[in-house]
Image (cartoon, rainbow, N blue to C red; front, side, top):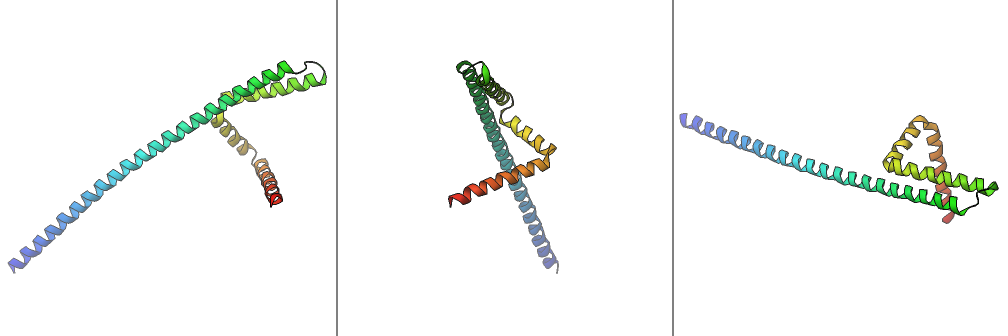
Length: 143
């Protein structure tokens, strides 16, 4: 009988040791997976940040182009009369838009649109419905 309880104890000890080793392996695997996940998250965040920076740079360059176009309009169009007033208005609008693009970039524009939607949700819904209607009309007429 003593031999049987000794054998049972050895089996129980072996099982306990195996469970402990299994827990250790699982903990190690979890820690490694967590580290890999964190590294992937950091890399994705860096890539997204670089993409936003490049988009903002492109918007800034486009803003500079609009400002240059405004100068061209100012210098190459009449300065007096109805045409002069129209060309001055167009040049001012181009310059204002260019300055906005250079200062805000795409990320600033996205924030402004978000704020506009929050302030005027019904208008945003109506604009969305209108755009959807126009897109549906454009795609159905091509079929």
